[in-house]
Image (cartoon, rainbow, N blue to C red; front, side, top):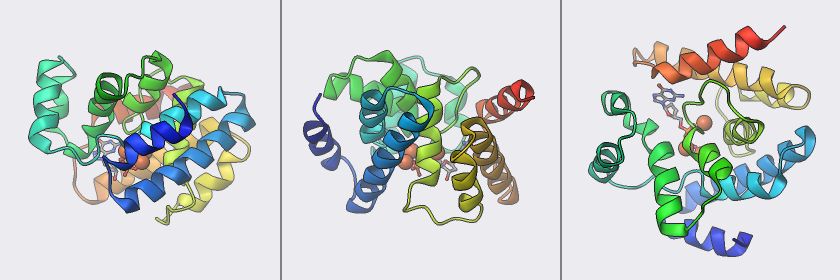
Length: 187
Ligand code: DGI
Ligand code: FE
Ligand code: FE
Ligand code: FE
């Protein structure tokens, strides 16, 4: 699918603010893909669609999680997690994207997973560091992303886990598993 067609499909689904964020993730994903040798076209497409389901009603997302036999534990955790796997499903169904690598980059852009692919890492980190992001710790991850994508990803996961814990919120197990997986692989 062409960039302009994909962007126009996404624009209908999300707010103007989220669309500007998406454009930031697209630019950053292409940059990181070039820097680390991922497929730039796949990175661009995954980034365009990554937050496709962000504004779907919670009831619709919960119904899809059940019907499609996605991880039922998702329902017990924060609903912010749902738009990633539900997004991958809807992007395939409604936008006709069939590339499994692209769909997985959308599916795992919030939680990560054990054994993340390069493309998945690119989109995850781009989502965290795109120019519109201004939360504490983002600058450190931006610096790390210039030299070491895994180090940037570990730091982003660490920040997210700490952020959730400070708010006394539960942390979805895959977020911990991703952190452990990458940390144990690092020398
Ligand atoms: O959709 P975005 O805002 O662009 O970013 P995202 O898809 O990475 O969503 C991250 C949000 O999800 C973040 O504000 C924290 C929230 N969240 C809630 N529970 C969890 C969680 N994020 C992770 N990684 N793990 C959780 O258990
Ligand atoms: Fe998201
Ligand atoms: Fe994220
Ligand atoms: Fe996002």
